[in-house]
Length: 107
Image 1 (cartoon, rainbow, N blue to C red):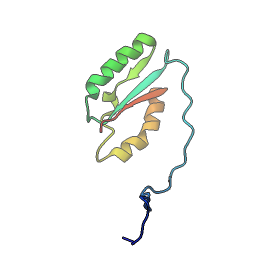
Image 2: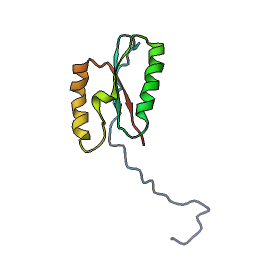
Image 3: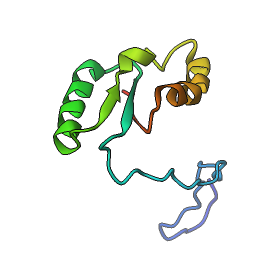
Image 4: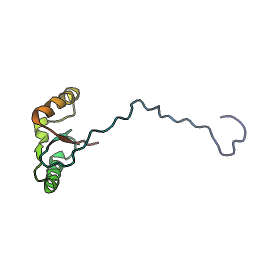
């Protein structure tokens, strides 16, 4: 530690690196979910089996004509084959006519 009077001020090091990823614009949101198909994705780690039922109920109360593709259709999006599963989602969404996604992940 250097000698001398620093009057309570110290040099510091900020350990955070410069941002590596650029901010991308978000996808356009649908104005309504009526008549839309919403996919549910889950990593099987925290109560999604309960939460998605509640979400469906709440969303259907507001948008009665919405359709859901259950998380059961996709299986877990987490684990040993995570990269493969995620890479295949765009094609699956297209095949299923998915307009929007609700992704549930636990920490």
